[in-house]
Each structure stands twice: as structure tokens, then as C-alpha cells.
Length: 165
Image (tube, rainbow, N blue to C red; front, side, top):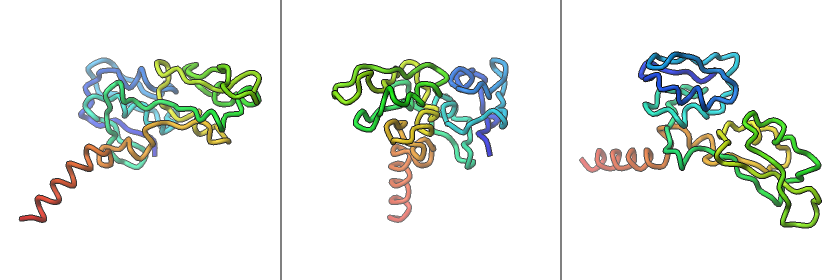
């Protein structure tokens, strides 16, 4: 099941701008729609949705994040084979990845580097890397509203208060 937008959508277009596959359509101030044939279930839209109006591929509500906490790719330089591969660089629809000189001497042309201003956290690079050299933070399971640490702590407090009654 692809991601879906529910009726609390305010039509702000944040999800449209963040979607790496142009799977989302809709006019400003109207409920948007996700094309399930184009959706890659990456969660980039849910992370930026102010009213939290997006359900993930499992039907769970996505957690919106403030800009400085948006999902972003991180490179594990020790695992990156860099110039011998470049799959992550080639798969990125936002040109958020490039080769930079490596601090280590075993790769003449460098390793992958992320420009966080361009990265949407769409997971295409993470899914394409066979060397576990790139991952998205926060992980997919933390992008769900009911599983985010802040939500968990609130839920735990509510459960504790209920148990104390």
C-alpha cells in the first residue's frame, strides 16, 4: 500500500516540494492526492506535513518534524567505496550526493558526501547501497507519530497515570 493523504490536509504543498518522484498532486488549499503508482514509500512527504495528514504504507500516521530534524542521509565513510561505485550518487533525484576527497588513502577519488540542504531523506540512496555506507536518520520506524520518542514518552505517562488510578 502506498502512502496516502487524509482529509485533514490543508493544501500547503510542502509534501509536493519534498516528494522525490512527483507522486503528489493538488492545488494550494485543497486536499492533495498521492499516486500509488509513483509513490516509493519513502516518507519524505510525511516528515514535512504540518497537519500530519499522511498515512504511511502500513496505515500509520506520519510524524512531522521541524526543519532541523528532517530526515537526512548520513555516510559511513569507512564503508563507502566511493569512486568505484557511485550508485547512491546516480540514484539521487535531488543531486544531494557527490564525491569528496577521502580522509583515508585507500580511495584516490574520494567517498560520497551529502548536501543536507538538498537531501529529502527519501531512502533511495540507502536502499541502493550494498555496502551499508549510507543511511537515513531518523530510521523509518521513528517516522511514525505513535512511535516517535516524544509521543512514546507522552503515551508512557498517560499509561502510568491510568495505571495509578
